[in-house]
Length: 118
Image (tube, rainbow, N blue to C red; front, side):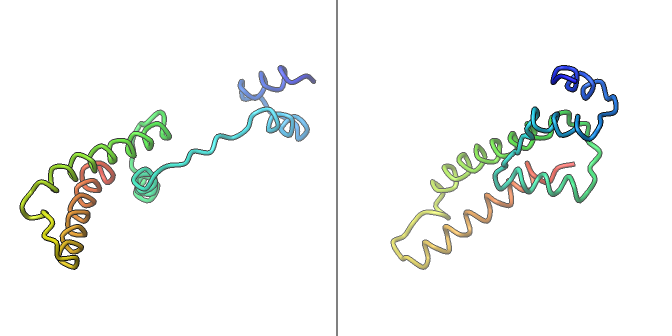
C-alpha cells in the first residue's frame, strides 16, 4: 500500500495495520508546542480543573495567554515604576524589596486576569 493510501485511511478514521501505523508515524511528525510560564500555568489549570471550554485550538489559545501576559507585564511595569510607591531611592535593600513587591503585584494581576479564568 502506498503512502497516499495510508494517509487517506488515517484521515478517514479507517483501521490501520501495525505496518501502516509505522509508515503513518514516519510521515506525520508530532508537533511539540512549547509554552511560556503563563501558558504552561493555564494549561495545567485547564487540565486540573476540567474546565469545560470549547476551545478549538488549545495551542493557539495557550500561546495567546503567554502573549497577553507579556503585554500586561510590560504595561503594568511601566505604569508602576512611575509611581512614587515603587520609585527607587538608592538604598539597595529598600529598592530590592520595592522591586519584589512590584513583581508580586504584577504577577498576581496576570494570574487573576489572564491565567486562572473560567
